Length: 362
Image (cartoon, rainbow, N blue to C red):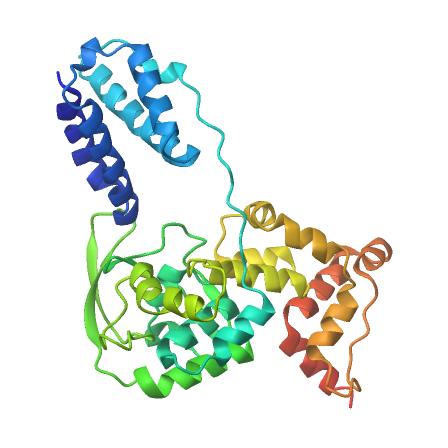
């Protein structure tokens, strides 16, 4: 049987199993395999043929992309073996290529200031940038944010959906479906947006559920609207193309995708002394270890800092008359039990609480 026939069968099965964005990416790669190997009879393909093909891909694409092609070829062979077409899987003898992990490139404070102070930009798009660095939401979550998800009195934002290519879906993992604490600055951004979009006509959207099959309808009011189309953003590519990339070019700022707003939130939070566990929860990571691996460089920098000075700098007044004096973190943890250490973590992560306690001492 020809490779293309088996590949098409595998694709059909994958469509019901994968999220839209994942399937779209895999379909592109599978079509490349069909183009390159589709006319071959799978029974006649040898290990050397597959190895040569994969090595050829490595001359053109990154290690992660080549490994993804290898994974799809593996699916083709597993399917062929299950159907009794072939007896062996040559992919098992081919190792994955070592991936280069892309280093996060957060925006510097100077770059943030330049972007926020640039006048000739649309309000909704600029405030989306601002809320991104204040909350750490994924760009797909920001673009799908609705007023029904926000409680300004409780200062809480619920992450309930994401959007890619106008396709809405619930969060992939339980940790991604989360409640995000809002700072006063984040609330101020939302209050600015409220008068522009909170009272627009609600619209129905279809949201794919976690089984990648069931679809539910919701009536929502979007927080962010595309200033050019007067409609909700279709996805991160539209936001980047219509606003983000041109703005970076105008300001002569190194190009990054809007996904780096999330990296900016993480790096700045760590620099300010926020506990890794709290940051991980805010960002919807599956574990604190994931956050640690991803942002190790900023954690190392932060460990050299004095947590008390970090906190005082954030909640002190301009004349420095109101400060909370806390001991060095490592010394504190050696001399006190874990319960008090947890309280220190809480004060560091909740500047508003610390400020309220400080106010009660007057």
